[in-house]
Image 1: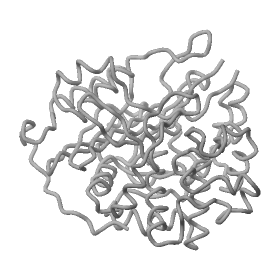
Image 2: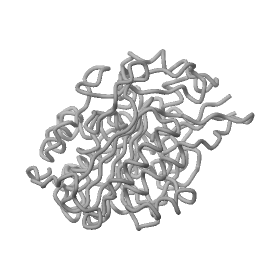
Image 3: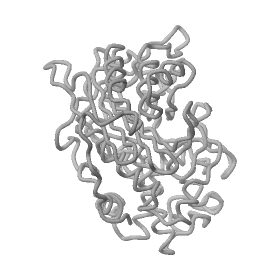
Length: 415
């Protein structure tokens, strides 16, 4: 049977934004503080150990948290905790590549053989373009099943085996290229981490800097993101939660994966941040403070996107995707790694952002065919997101069963 796993991405100087008092009017701001707290508590009651969230609407800001960061000690979660944001890293990588497009060192529609011919040689490298890496239409398969080979045998033992292993980016690319392609270049958008490992290598080739160093220097710091960084060790620096996962019961009891060597995701998903930093970055991005108009148009040019299981993801651009909700269209990305999940949304005009992070993954149990079964967490998380995006109790309650946040299915355990 198959077990779905989810992975569930130069600015100007920092913007000064006032922080309103706790009593600021929800009617003015559109942020329903009371309902947000209720839905966060509801997510914990449904089984999530801990959750933290942040919302921005115009100049109004709110943050909150519920539950625990440590199941053993009962240490509470806090809104400012640092968090592995996984595939949200892709949004930052795409921004960095688009900066180089503006500078003329990278062409979006140039073949990647111009930059990485030694890694993707021959006709394949000539047919795949830089754009195809960023919108996942390259046809290169995700490497994760081969980096964690026990997944192919219906076991999650490789997760423990690789806890302190260091993967080289070239090693991960080789695994993805050796796997059967998902299609011809440009044929279909199927989500693959291999694309963004290659994008990181490409950045290094054209800038002369390690991609993490380039992104830190030219994307993270200019945006004034004080709690966003790429880890240099398996540990999360600063206040953080534990990260709980049992891989749908394959690893029991539930285990903590907050200490982990994230080289297996690299520029595809190793970044650490906070919900406030993510909201700030998406605000800057969608108010034109990160990329120029031409580069932003390229970023928001979409194709129909699908996860590795062939499930519709939405309209995928370059490191970002669009999702329709009961209160309009939002630009978003999800990120999930072992034990941690993140969702970030912004309105197209940059006026409203909502981010939420949580400290457990793969909470579903499986039926006899290996299909994940519905869980109360699903509905509770939908209520949190809809309240954060739309505001108001009635909107969230009415739509929670009909609408769910989109996550990216990276791979499936085969057994």
